[in-house]
Amino acid sequence: MPSRPVDRISVEAVDSNAGAFDRFTSIELTNDLTAPAEAAFECGDDGTFRTFEKAVSFGTVFAVLVNDRLRLTGRVEAHDIPTDAQGGATVRFVIRTKLSDAAYASANPKISIQGATLKQVVLRAYAPLGFLERDFIFKQDLARDLMTGKSSRARQRTLDLEPIKLEQAKVSPPETIFEFVERHLLRFHLTHWDSPDGKIVVGAPDDSQQPIYNFKLKTGANGRFNNVLRAQRVRDLSDAPSLMSVFGIGGKTDFQKTKVARALSIPEVAQAKLYRPVIIVDEGLRTGDQAEGRLRREIAARSKKLDSWEIGTDGWTYWDGQSRTPYGIDTCADVEIDTAGGALGSYLVHRTRLRLDPQNGAVADLSLVRKGLWVI
Image (cartoon, rainbow, N blue to C red; front, side, top):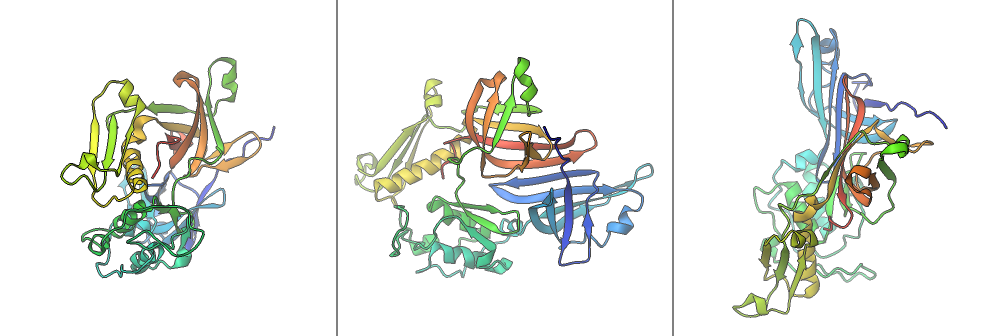
């Protein structure tokens, strides 16, 4: 059996003379389906300040690579230089993607909405940040009318959406670019997140794909195949309803008489005999499919903690004995942990954090949620 290669991380300047770095005191690199990606590094010796003062100036663009594969492309947004008499000077700097601008900057209220497709609105919203169409990865067809959800184009996937009025569709200051785009994407059962090459992915997490990782923590003789350093399973009913009901228009003054309604119970909450019904009334819902979509989004937002994992592994890649595979978001993993019930099935990886420090070496922390719980 071949030996596992040592994982390596490097930071290379883009469009500047800052050079490249591959020696660090500590590292924390995070990719997340719900937040901008970022990387924090610490480099240090007596000559650190003089060497790095200009190299890590604000706005300098760096590409972060793991085993020569892109992981993040972003700019320096923060740094500090702690100094003491014994350890000398160190430099800590943080690289974040341009999606962090979108999460901070208010969207332009003058964005043209009427008659625009969802794709056009996404591009218009991100234009002030310098994003063009080539800077996006559109995983689903977005050639749909933003306000009606309809399109005359053939061979569209079936998607019956509640229409939205012009005033509702416009930017609502101080709504950020990210919030504005995400609000409309969610209506179309989509979301958006960072791609390693600095682009933005527009799509939906796919927990139906085949798992590419298999995390094991077995007891007894089978423990020789273990690849998990630590694991914590969270099963939390605190945010989950016992019954979620969504009602649309109709029924005059009694919304419960409407024919546009959907309801869903959560088995785990019902079995615990917790009484936590939630009722949502939305006059914009005109069909059963629209009510079903709203119901699923509400359930997903409240039920992620029903079955989730925090798993720690050795190294920054998955090693199967023959080859290594980078840990990535919007992927799936099989989980087999004896102390939590054995083979537990497939889980969606929605957050990865690669770390390096003098005490633990190179480790990865992965956040997973059970298949079927995150349906936008």
